[in-house]
Length: 116
Image (tube, rainbow, N blue to C red; front, side, top):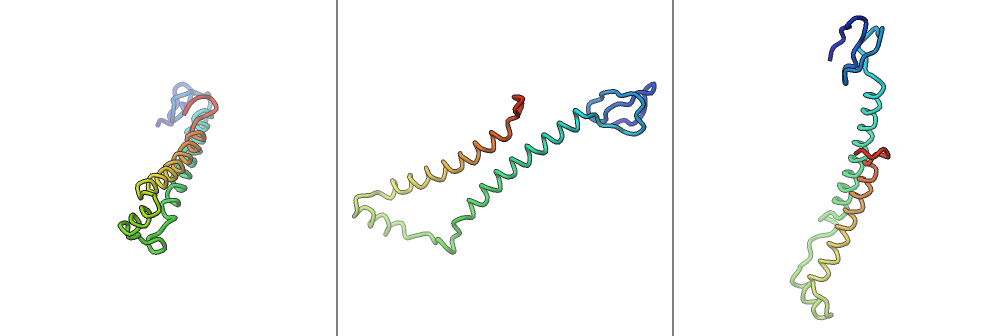
């Protein structure tokens, strides 16, 4: 970052763009706009991470203790259902929810100008 002049021209401290007769260190409009856009993208990504974190905390062990899986397997088998089928259904639900949160975040992260 240089705040010196070169024949009365000042350089943007980020990209080096030059502007005449600036009186202090200067950052051009394009660099400021890029920084604001980047901050907005970071905020969107952080929101998605917070949603995932909140979901991860939604089923605490003190409220939903780990069941006796052998007992559950036997009870389900008596009803003609496998524990594996129940587990697969639960995992599909979870991963679908995670995928939705990620896809929504990615949509927000993609700029309307085609840059990401």
